[in-house]
Length: 230
Ligand SMILES: [Mg+2]
Ligand SMILES: [Zn+2]
Image (tube, rainbow, N blue to C red; front, side, top):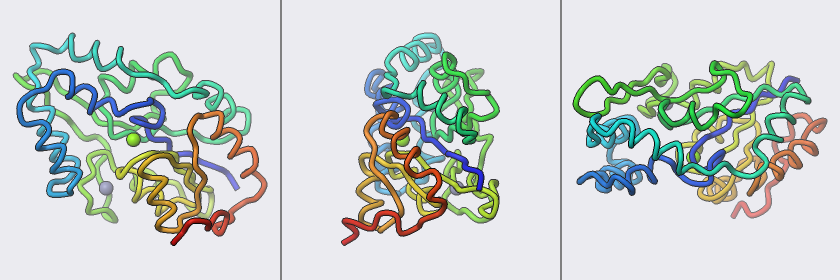
């Protein structure tokens, strides 16, 4: 069976969450309340992220883009991981709730075709930043995700592909539940343990390579790791 990986960006490929770092730095009034509303699920990710960016003036475009790109640190092993996927014929897609103006520039030094990167868009033509959503939820998702990871996963037939998710946060949980196998850190890891999802923990992409090397050939083994599922 073919393998396809859906790899998160913020907090997965990069060490930290780029959107949070950006807002911490520019600190427009009201952003933290919106962030809390998103985390408490009082508003959807699409609404919350859209409103947060509408607090930023497009007059600062250059400064905002430069800061977002410069502050990002790539998790160790990512470049080797891309090579590993290519060598093993694993389809690698980047599925990010991030925004085009930092996702593409940060990834530009890696050999990933633009069409394999799924993220949100941005429009700087007005007074404040407007986020646009080229990858909305399909008819099976009512999450109002913005960039809908489960919709992207569903576009890969489960009979044809083993679908693997790599991620770190709440925004990856629905994807992890749909996937055959998840490689997780941080909040997502806790949830995978709690909910008994088929998963392995990772810290760097060297770990991911190691996990996938052993995972290959086992095929679909949904009961792979059921430790700590209390
Ligand atoms: Mg993330
Ligand atoms: Zn959705």
